[in-house]
Image 1 (tube, rainbow, N blue to C red):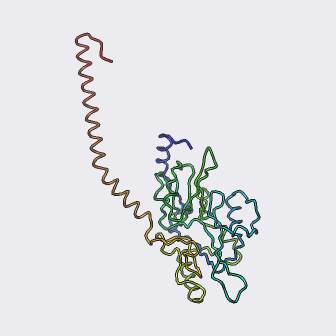
Image 2 (image 1 turned 45 degrees about the vertical axis):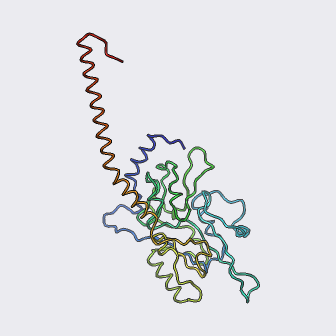
Length: 309
């Protein structure tokens, strides 16, 4: 992607006005509740119907192997520019009453952080957070800096390196459609046959997760992953094993965006005085040079000499 000053400035100006609002226009509408999705890894059977539904909804390239192919679980995968969600399998401890080791299946996608670092890092507003919490992408503003990829604590945004002319940053957008003014409506959750994925309001999902854990304490860990990690995420996980065993990263409860924004504010605040001084000195030098040129032109015109070039 060719980047020039005009494109950068236009993107910056557009970013000022871009605020994805997924509600219908109505002054009486309240701010919509925070959307969320609960992943119960003890119910996931690894059918990959969520992957199929995501692929269809987002018009992604179809894989070369069928969704029923279980060989994909032999290795670990990550979301990519052609697959916004994937399911991995994790072998459990040997079970004495079973012939084979039980497995845990874990779905991976953008976590839609409550305080998204990718949005904070984006300098032109191409990454933005809608009012229901969906983190969406505006390709018309993107300048390809890929700061969002560096900032994401979950390493989710993927870049279209194979696209030469207009590569995009690609990731799950919670099936939100800002252009159509529709909010989060994940196809993956609608396709899940075992209710391992439950979509709804985040606070209600937290209550549901706690109720499940209380009803079956022998089945679940006493922890809801995503409740506090990285400042909290819209995707929440109930697990029967330590999250670290399922590649769910151990992250602090403070969003990385809090720290980076604090640093930026101090840097910008500290740069105001020297920037103003440089502007003042530059203006003073320009004014002095202008007066010298005017004096030289007047002197030359009085003496009949041609002005110096």
